[in-house]
Each structure stands twice: as C-alpha cells, then as structure tokens.
Image 1 (cartoon, rainbow, N blue to C red):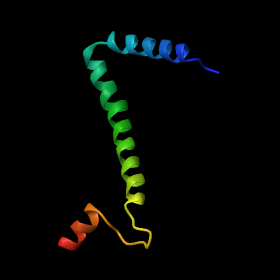
Image 2 (cartoon, rainbow, N blue to C red):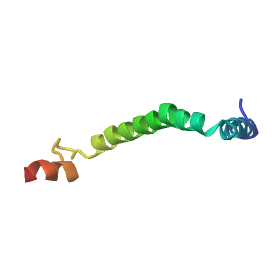
Image 3 (cartoon, rainbow, N blue to C red):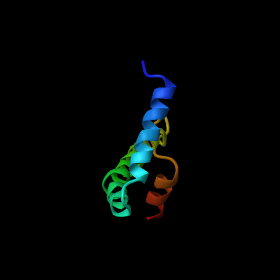
Image 4 (cartoon, one colour):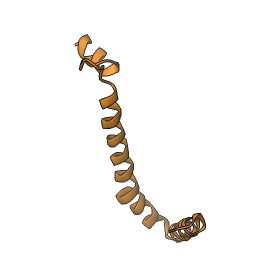
Length: 71
C-alpha cells in the first residue's frame, strides 16, 4: 500500500519538475493536459448532477426545465 508520505513525495517531485520547466513548456503542459482534464471533470459532473435533477416521476425540474418552458 502507498502511504500518505509516498503520495506527498511523488507530488512534490512532480511539482518541482513542472516549476523548473521553461515557461513555454508549462503553458503547453497546461493547454494539452490540464485544460482537457478540467473539461472532462466538468462534463462528468454536469452529467451526474443532471441525473439528480429529475423528479421521482421522471419530470425535469430545475433550471434546465425552466429554460425549456420559457421558449
């Protein structure tokens, strides 16, 4: 099993590696890795919360249902 200390040490090593990269490579890393990862998490959370936005009888409730009714 991994200990918390092992995880912290690994994160520290990664953080040190990333901060020592030239700025251009940091920007590329964020653009290629971090932004798509954040977008994936946001889309996943949106889909999960949308499932909980349905009433037990299957009707939509909440903001999206109100927006559909307003059209």
